[in-house]
Image 1 (cartoon, rainbow, N blue to C red):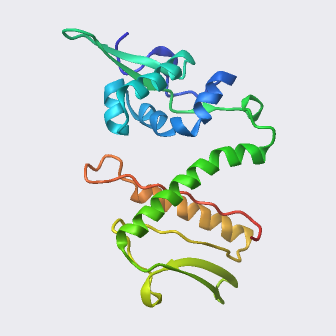
Image 2: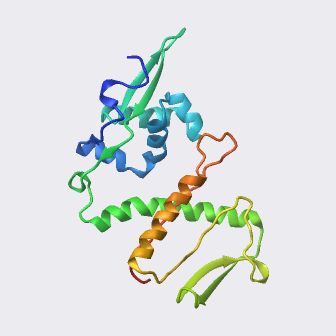
Image 3: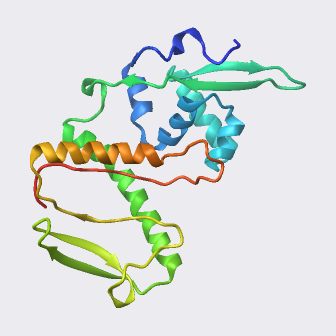
Length: 216
């Protein structure tokens, strides 16, 4: 098989999936691997280098995706010795709730959010430690949005800047529904504006945006 895509990996259609494929696609451990294979074809050794994982572990995960027909052979590069096999994943999948293992929507959300929030808190703590600041928590009410905000701050009440710039904050806002929709769209547009995946000097940042009606 040669060429950038096999016939079943057309980018023009949204791919339906089976229960086995849903399990692979929704496994948080596969997210970064899937992301790279959706972007462009990769071999197992290339993925292992990108993900900084042992090659046998990457081979195992890739073979599992291939058996489930989530990853598919994109090209076969002949060379002396073993040929280089590069794989690709369809860039758009529809996963019905009925095919997931979750009993409720809340279970499904928690299964997806919990490991990601754990990773974000892990990396945030690492950055805070590297800054060597005497961190403290500040809980304060702001009249502008009629809500309370909890932030981490350095000595003297100033927000210290970690070695790698980042932001971590949670609180509440008072918004009309139409303004909430406007804010949501602006935040998404801003993320797309700043994203530079092809910039060789860019480094990966984790980001997550949540804006839902309710109170803590």
